[in-house]
Length: 76
Image: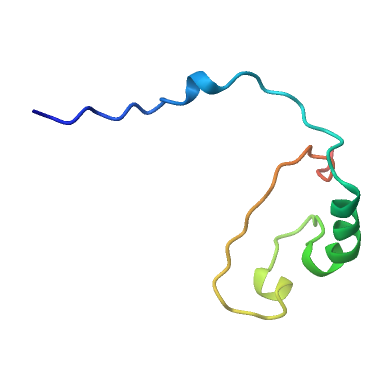
C-alpha cells in the first residue's frame, strides 16, 4: 500500500478574506522606527546598492529581505 499523497493546498479553504491593513503601527513601533531607523534602515536610492558599503565594509554573506508594506516609499 502507498501512503496518501500530500495535497498541496490543504489549507486554502481556511482563507476567509483579504483586507487592506492600514493604520496599525503602534506608538511604540513608530518610536522604534524614528529612533532606530537611521541606524538600521537603508534609504531608497536610484542606483545599485553596494551591500558591503551599506554594512560598513563587511564582506560577510548577507540576506536581503524586502518588505512590501503599502508601497508608500516607492517612487510613483
